[in-house]
Length: 360
Image (cartoon, rainbow, N blue to C red; front, side, top):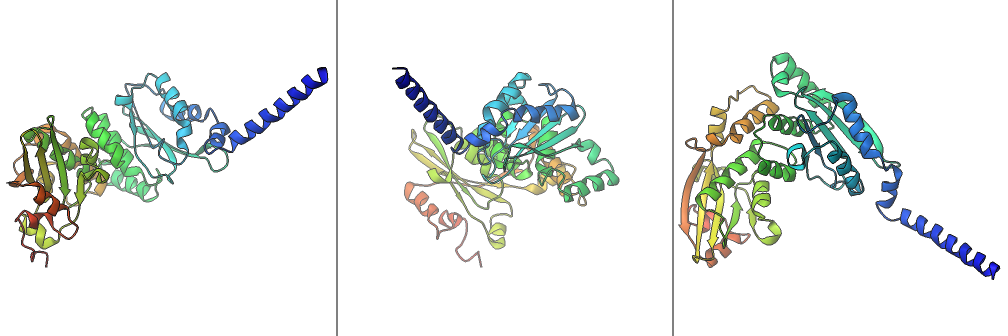
């Protein structure tokens, strides 16, 4: 009897050992076991340079969850995040990134203007592979020609491994206290802040104000010409390409000129309750932004784009004459909408706003 019990225990021990080894072979499990306190190290590394990370002064920007197998750190990350009384809607921006991108974190202190950038490597054993702290307060960096040149040099040297513009613009906009959470959600998809996204946010709000998204109403977007604005529509209205909600194409210079010089796209409003379908053609003029935001011709891109973003963030500027224009509003039917979607058709030609020869 004793021999039988010993054999059973030995068999169980072998099975348990095999199970442990097999779990280590599951994708993600090995990475998780390599360094279970890695997120604590990341937060501690930031605090070593910035001081206490707290809800009143800190923004954390990260792509955690996007890079391959970075999801294994999510629970530990949020445990560290919430243990410091940080708030999801106030102190965090989780940006979308490609699967083969590195896992990175940017901790920004709005009081000092300092930002600690950290990358994590998981090739062999997960650990902090890169860390640097810089002062990125916009008013400081843009103050003189010397300060601008100094930051330009750091950008050229990729001090944040190519994420300098994204981190600088998002952090400084957040520090103003005027960065809407709904706009922050759009930045999560686009993963940086630029006037292209800001213009999309203005256009989206214009549409919702003039053609409210009440029950039974939906938008189909022909984003033509395309720029960064499309990501706003995808996030805000769920107009994904897979669901047929957005169609993206370009225009020739001749076509752009024929449409007034600043076309932004066609927004088809379908109201199932009223049984109507309208094609709302809008324009957006960046010259108006540049003329009112304080942008100068010799400004480096990170200066001019941030100033434009600041101006576009202010809702009081949205009614500035010429910023958003109505090129046309037409009643259409389902057959017209179907023709607009066809690959060999220009939607503006289908609506009669362009001649088929104007792209020559």
